Amino acid sequence: MTSNAGDDKAWPSSARFATTQWSTVLSARDGQGSELREAWENLCRAYWAPLYAFVRREGYCPADAQDLTQEFVTRLLERDYLSRLEHQQGRFRSFLLTFLKNFLSEQRGRAKAQKRGGGQSIISFDQMAEEHQPELAAPNQLSPEQAYEQRWAETVMTRSLERLEAEYAAAGQTALFDLLKDLHPRDPTGPSQAQIGERLGISEAAVKSAAQRMRRRHREMVRAEIAPLVSQPGEIEEEMRYLREVLERTGGSLS
Image (tube, rainbow, N blue to C red):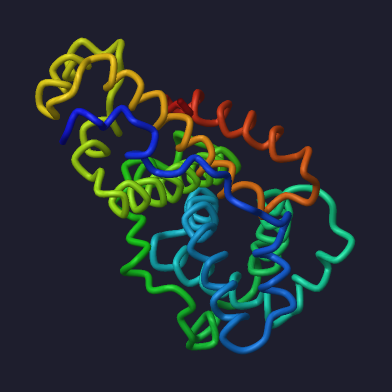
């Protein structure tokens, strides 16, 4: 790492993502062929974990929760639920949870289907691999709604951090990203900014500036995850505040 690391030109661009409210949802509703599948898979990847967490907290075993989650996301298209989004206002997160509750209500009292999900796997269960998560192994600690919200918040943070990591890697700043991603100035057990500077060959002031720049860019990435799934621009900030609240309740934070 050279000493020009504090130069803005050496850092990933701070240009904001261009986003269209509910663009992902509307693509899933209106798209055709590969466009439809790509948009739908993106939605499933973003929301499979929160949906699965809710179903598990409702008392279903892992295998049944996987089957029910798979069937639910399949039925969203089969029953044309997404066509109801045309005049829908609000957050896709809330819209989806309402439909999931209705879906589970329909399932209760019915004989278990021979094979849920129509035999088609939209998302690989191996890719999701949610059951190893400690919070899902203790169903009584959170309500279904709280589990859904927690997994939604964690998913937003994970996806945004992955986008940030890719951006730093493209700019040749992988080492910097790895050292700064878990930097907490008030954590006495972690490396100090001076120690990080020594490892990178830059000043402590440059490290401080780098950390501030990374936090700012990460917030932009978080907004980029949230913006396409609200119906009005003003709801982005509301959703950001709600994300902070959920993270604070679960011991996390949005820097």
